[in-house]
Length: 154
Image (cartoon, rainbow, N blue to C red; front, top):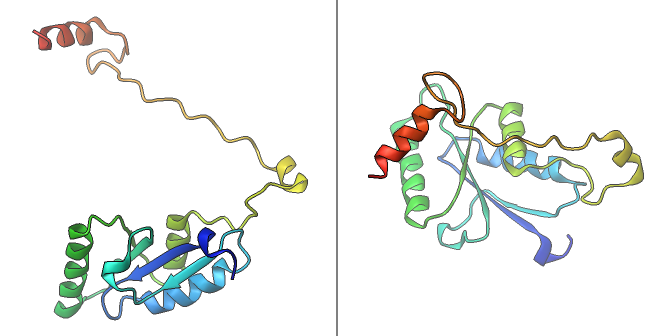
């Protein structure tokens, strides 16, 4: 199954009936053949999550039961108490699978580019940093901002 030190661990959490078992099965199929090796668990112990990518099933059911809502709330509180980062996954069926793959940022492509896919992929576009613009005139170097900053520093 690959080098255990390079394996990515994924924990799927969710209330009963939220689709975590279905998603675990679909993720296992979808991630087969990717450059990374994954270990997926849909029933992890909450105390063993450090270093694990946690996906929490969102309760986007039509009418979640009070038990499902309580379970979801308890999971969120436990994760917050442990200061464990997690991503909430919403959607039904294939949409949920696509959202989980996006959260994992899985492309299915080899980690080392080959000559064949290097030529066809465009270079990543550089993002411009956000520039503040004056609410009065939209000028990023407006005297209004400079004066406001000067007055605030007094």
